[in-house]
Image 1 (cartoon, rainbow, N blue to C red):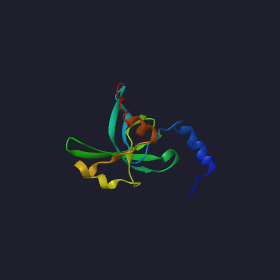
Image 2: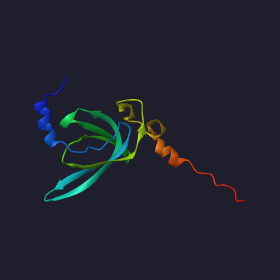
Image 3: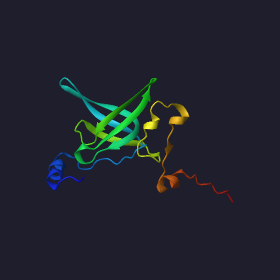
Image 4: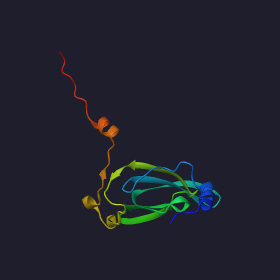
Length: 133
């Protein structure tokens, strides 16, 4: 069901002008603003994007991570003013839209292959040295 043009116009006022591009399977650093009393600070949540949901102003994504023996996942609203930055650390190569199967997995079974673009492959190729004449 599509949204009416009036709702899209109102939502466009509150949306971020250039949202970052990321995909399911990417390892990301999400920089969130934490308010403690009168002070604000940035906190980084690093993990794998396991799901993307919604559209427009209500678009959100779920990030999953395992740290210190416990796993946690967190849902972030993409256009929230509390999210200052989303940086892709490692693009992932996956064949699913939702990676819920990663929950509870550790080690090799929780690994995601890295996705390479054509420019990355060219940079990764080591140029052989020519023998001196």
